[in-house]
Image (cartoon, rainbow, N blue to C red; front, side, top):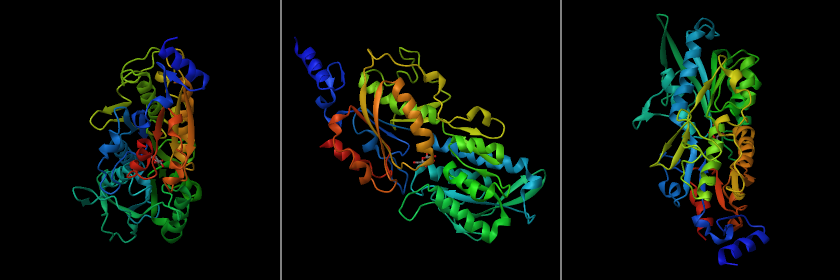
Length: 412
Ligand code: BGC
């Protein structure tokens, strides 16, 4: 028996996974494939990418979606709705179209982009250091807040004022961000003091949006807009939810696992992405972009409104063009450690993780899913006690600055 065959036989006996005779324990952790997803390693104050984390080793990538393209779509969706419904939208007839905004996480690039996108489309943004200010304003019923301004919309020859009446980061007392329950409480507070001035509700995501819709806006017929196209939000469009944005989670979940599969197979990273794999899986260029310099794959977004929501009713359905099972003899089973930063995050738990679970079978990956508490990195890193057992890692940080909390465990 030669050495390679012997290694494979021993590894097989030990129950370890192998490719070309290499077991998880033979590769140094620091050299194993690593994908960051959903929270891009970056400075939470400036947004600057953390290139050290993104280039941790030659098989490191980020998978997310195009935050600016999506944010612009969200802003335009809200503006289009106002224009189409101008005759009935101003509920108290004061000539001011008032909206409230639920902010997810003031240090998260996706959240910042969405706040800016809405303010830009509605004309309520003000400049700060060359970009639209994304700070929450608290309440602004009199229009005097400095982080926003009153916007104007010209519709059918009439000029209307648009005002951001209130906005707040939805963070709970334990520190979890994008917190749906906090948003439900906020709309309660806002509506009891200036409810008749609220004509539109906007949220950085559907988790918070649906919480506000269920707590208040549904009963008061106030259109509410979110982001993510979670199944419950899409279904609510039939009951008056204004609309949402699909960030193509089906494509993102695929890419998250696919880049690991490719690195483990030792094939070109484009396999099954821009180039068909041996099973015929391939993505077309209208659903994602790859930015090589940033080592990042970004899925493209699609607006979901009353016009097209029937096509988006199941957010956990895998994407047809990349749905063919890989052959296990050519793509043997590999073990992946993957964490979700907050097990209670609506989008990640109701949309993203179910999609990952569908794709892991197709890609012959055995994934251990670790759910965090959304508050501290250590709650998650404590459960990466034995990285040597895994072939690759998929990481969703609590805070985008904290990549080193994970890579330091792989360095050892
Ligand atoms: C999603 C949010 C989610 C957040 C978590 C965003 O991309 O739109 O719904 O809470 O990611 O990091």
